[in-house]
Image 1: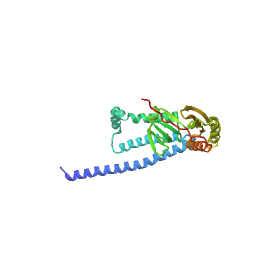
Image 2 (image 1 turned 60 degrees about the horizontal axis):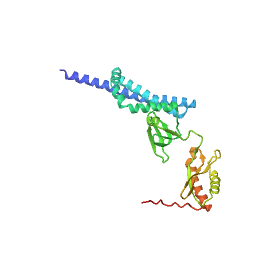
Image 3 (image 1 turned 180 degrees about the vertical axis):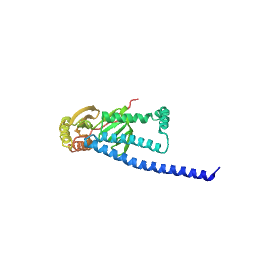
Image 4 (image 1 turned 45 degrees about the vertical axis):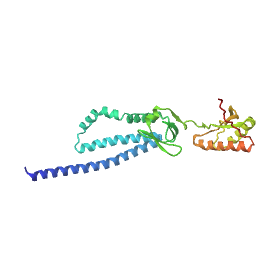
Length: 268
């Protein structure tokens, strides 16, 4: 056996493989740059057509995944990997992959329907999948939501699509529900009139529809008022807390006696 010839053959093979590897690395770098360039072109084109940002991001992410898969297959072909055999192998393992990725594929399909049906968009305040907050992004598989306490939460698209969904930003205004207890000694009409006047003066409270101040129920200590101002979703918590302060100021400064809640007595 000619050792010198064997060494030469191995050296040539290693050099050939090394050059192929360097070529594949160069193709990967250039390919990734071209993919980013193509995504940028797509994003700018859709943005110029005034397409909603949610659809722009979803289309860009989808294009990125498709082009990256094509790039990987091309690099494998450069390295001598038979892509047809590779595709056949994937097809043979399709059942197992489908079972393992069923949840992932369901999230992908649900994401597509969320973009098409558009029950909400980026920036909307929603309650979905057990999470309430502002939509940051609708991704391929998950939707990013920022909760009111500033926690970024990722919810699977399928969980959102298959569960009840509330969009608080869909309508031009929403109602703030607050209750106020009154003692029996308080004249309810007088208190209701003063509360309605004070609540109507709160910033960002809508005049149409006007705030509702009505008797909601009766209790052992007196009346329970339902105080319901209306506002845009963006001002909900500001109106909520300002209404609480307004109720406190009206009931205390107006000299209305505080209700006395007596504990219930149990009978033996």
